Amino acid sequence: MKSDDQDFEQHIKRLLADPSYRDHPLYIALACLWQQHREQLTRLERITSLSDAYQALARTRELSLSERFDKQVRQLEKVVRISDRYQEMMRDLNLALKEASTHDPLTGLANRRLLLDRLKEETERYTRNGHTFVLAMLDVDYFKQVNDKHGHDVGDKVLQAIARTMQAELREYDVCGRWGGEEFLFLLPETSLPAALAVIARVHQGIRELAVRNGDAAITVTCSIGVAEHRADESFADTLNRADAALLDAKRDGRDRMHSE
Amino acid sequence: MSNLSIPGSQSTPTIEAGWDSGVLSMHGDSYPENSFELFGKVIRWVEQFLSATTLPFRLELHLLYLNTSSIKALMDILDLLEDAHHAGREVSVNWYYDQGNERVAQVAEEFKEDFSFAFSIIGKAR
Image (cartoon, rainbow over all chains, first blue to last red; front, side, top):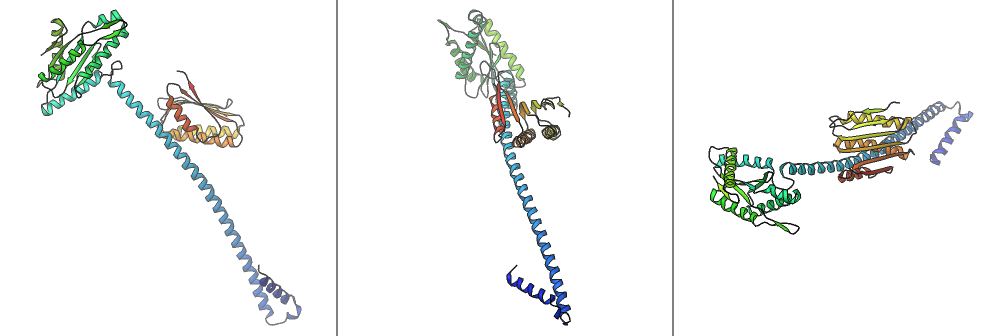
């Protein structure tokens, strides 16, 4: 309180305390006014203190809310980061599973499942636009002897080398996969029989020229191939059967040759 | 107080908690349909254990895949441990992973970040 106010208050108090003013006509009026002034002052102080307390409360609440908010945000960011990590893991795992389910682990070539998918696709393409395709079934001649003589490890190496040769000699859009054991299937899309035979002859020759080293020995192999072009009104299973039959003919004719239906 | 034993399934981890041992363990994958229901029980157990006893607490994790709500629940548990640690309680986490799966260790490292209590990431030979 300012000292002027204090002096004024003291002055009023003195006037009211002085008995000589008791009978003054303004005494009662001044006493009432003074009383009212005191009450208003008290009320004002109460309101001020309530308002201060409320503000302090709101401030504390705001601080703790903002602290909690910051904590939640930090936690959320961390959860999101970790969740992204898990999703990356799942995605990579998916890719690996897809690769494993569609490829042969030994040669890295398409497996039978992927070959069948591609056969279905090519048959549908043929139905839509009449673009034909050619299938070739390849079987390594006397492969059992390689295994028996040199062991399965070496046999596996020979299969891997054959797979590399096939991939090198085939065109980029040709599909080649391991059908089973030492049997491989080629799918040559949008290709006529003469064009396909030229490509397959290259593969045949490439395999003939292969030499897989095992110590001092160089292992060479030949293969027999049956070729069939997909025909109208035929399922891919029929085409496969004709390629198989041609392969059997090639074997019967003395191996190391290709036959087409 | 009671122990906690929740059998695992294909999508939920096996959860065991011992009141006397002070060990909570979780094994397996976690992508439950209702994580809040599953982990709500676990979080309540941890809260009760930390407030009703003064025993050391250890969390043993053998977790592989966690969906987002499971990550959040685990983070809530770890936050409880951090608070308890600041209050002077002895708490620790052992996260076990298969050495053939290094990426689980990387995720565990991400969880560990920012926490100041003992948090070990332990590789097991297959």
